[in-house]
Amino acid sequence: MIIKVLLVDDHKIMRDGLVSLLNDAKDIDVVAEASGGGEAVEKSLAHAPDVVVMDLNLPDMGGIEAIRRIVAKNPRIRILVLSMLMDRNCVLESLEAGARGYLAKDCAAEELVEAIRTVYAGNPYFCDDATEIMIKGFTPGSVSERIAPTLTKRELEVLKLTAEGESTKEIAFELGVSIKMIEIHRMNIRRKLGLKSIAQLTIYAARIGLISIE
View 1 (cartoon, one colour):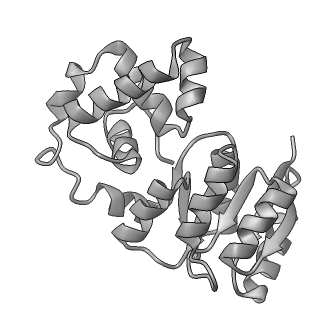
View 2 (cartoon, rainbow, N blue to C red):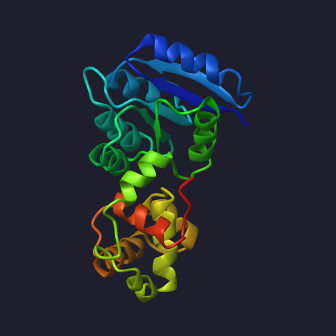
């Protein structure tokens, strides 16, 4: 299976380097490039890539807004952020927008290739710095580890699938229940855990071992 990739970065020299690097991976094909957020949205529609490797500092439309629009138009596209910005707001806002991974631009070539393969497979991937940023401050004092046992088996299933990036419709189909029932489960999960966002649910799922953050 060939993974179709859209590269989004406002520096051509950076895109050229990434194309050269990814060409060495036999299962990855760079099908398009974009230098801005608006262009990224347009080319995601035109080329239907499997994975978008997205910078955040972009002209005409920020990377986070571009992520939000791409995912809204095609939820099956996986977004991997590749950025020099390493702060809590950028990481969490990227997850909120729909990104499935976050990687530093100074990462090794092998890690970028592995991250693309990981998010393509539907799993989250965060570099060590991004993982530390997400978990820092997310302590048992803010969400008690003892709360996890209060979730029902079905709620744990919904939490896991949500953290893995599946949509409400996809989860309903997989579990053989109505979309309304999944919405109720998610509401109960948020109420029991005291969490409000998908990003927080993803971090929590990783902390209790439901998913792994590479």
